Amino acid sequence: MRIVFLGPPGAGKGTQADIISKRYGIRKISTGDILRNEMENNTELGKLAKEYVKKGELVPDEIMVKIIENNIKNLESFILDGFPRTINQAIELDKITHIDKVIHIKVPDEEIKRRLINRGRIDDKLDVIENRIKVYREQTQPLIEYYKNKGILYEVEGVGSIEEITKRIESTLKS
Ligand code: AMP
Image (cartoon, rainbow, N blue to C red; front, side, top):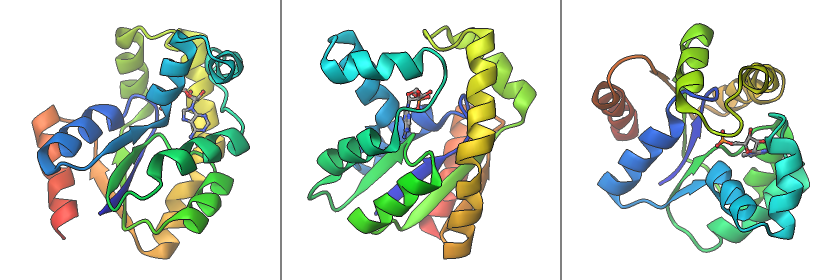
């Protein structure tokens, strides 16, 4: 199965994608993790990405699409965590592969901010957090409508214990 996890920063996409990935033996591909790895290794891509990531901006679509193309090549199943983040990325993704299900993890704004402040990543400072939420609203949220129109969107409440949320996700995967 080819799955996309969608949701605001701090929704728990990464945590849930990890659990589902291990439980079902489906490869998880996190564009945020890929970029952080490149930044740690100070590669050309890492240096470029850092300029965007540290401000809470999106890395240009062209670069992200190439990364995804290289990472999902020949995979029958995968979970995408953090991609697509723009309509353009979604359109390009549809040219590369067929997505079966999109799981939208819903979390209210105040809860998101509280979670991110407690996480402490380099892009988890308050002003950057606020920008990431704004960027999410403007550029990523339209994907909800995009996938709803395709009939593959599944909504999951993202507030509760980790295991409760995993159960909700599992029931959408079985439906
Ligand atoms: P994440 O770990 O998914 O929250 O991603 C951390 C940061 O990496 C984001 O705030 C963006 O700057 C960048 N990033 C990750 N995935 C994408 C993507 N699909 N498109 C553009 N930028 C991305």
